[in-house]
Length: 72
Image (cartoon, rainbow, N blue to C red; front, side):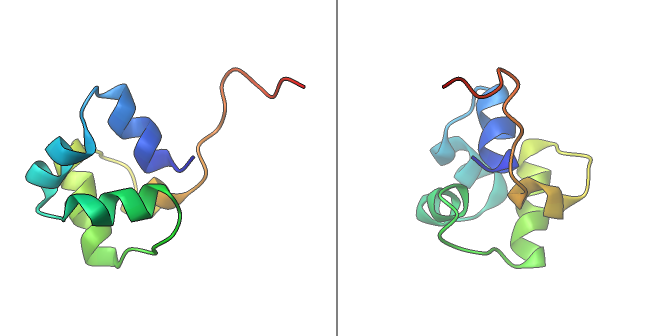
């Protein structure tokens, strides 16, 4: 999971809502979250604004840490 999905779900907003807030197509958000598309810096900025994310927008595509840890 990338940080984008973790931040979005932590805010309890859907991909459709993030699409509305950021101006990006819902399928683009899905592809980014699924790590099947690398967004441009401008797209990352739009996502950061849509989320109210104050960190580095590039961090949104970094792997999200698993707080619960790995269980085997």
